[in-house]
Length: 283
Image (cartoon, rainbow, N blue to C red):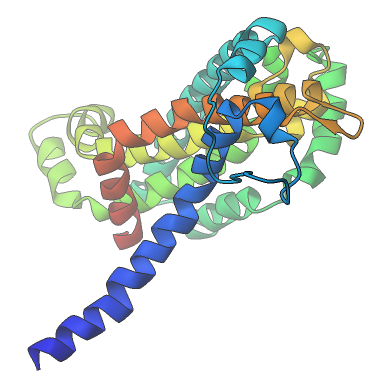
């Protein structure tokens, strides 16, 4: 019986988990190998003698050096960081207040309004960038960071609102009612009682918003044109792909370095991230 249980655990748990981890991490491994592989090996045919497609015997930092010295990658990273942080902050503030109002305040059509807000998140960005581009042009925000800072919340706020609404519903109302009985206003009860408890949900929404802002491509491609204003996703693909020529080494180096900030954010806040999702699902 014990041997059968061990066998089932290997077949239905360990082997699928190992296959999932391998498929998940292999793209990052391939990026690392391609980023440090010299051009002599990178463009060698697969059927060439002594060719190792999954390893290199002569690693080099030439591609990373080219990316940092010959392109505006540092500027792209700074632009992306500023845009992602500011748009995430705006979306969190709006999402927290909107989520609290929909979860705690009793007013007509609150449920339908919450569903409508989330449905707006599901609208494809490829449909929204056309009217948004007209607005950006009318306000003369094109080719500036404000074009993205003010348009990213259009899809970040609905998601943050939906996530925070679910998390606020999971917090017992009795905690807030006790504070109200002791004389606290609704705003103070929210500020000093509810928000400290909702920190995991706020961090979870912030991680999602930061990740979506960092990886966004369509709006950045449409609203930014000069190389000095581009973000990492647009800058790497537009400057390192020229016609049908792909600079695979710098491309993989840019993809690898561009994914580090998001990986660091997830690694530092993973516990709060999971707790926030759990609270939102329970709500």
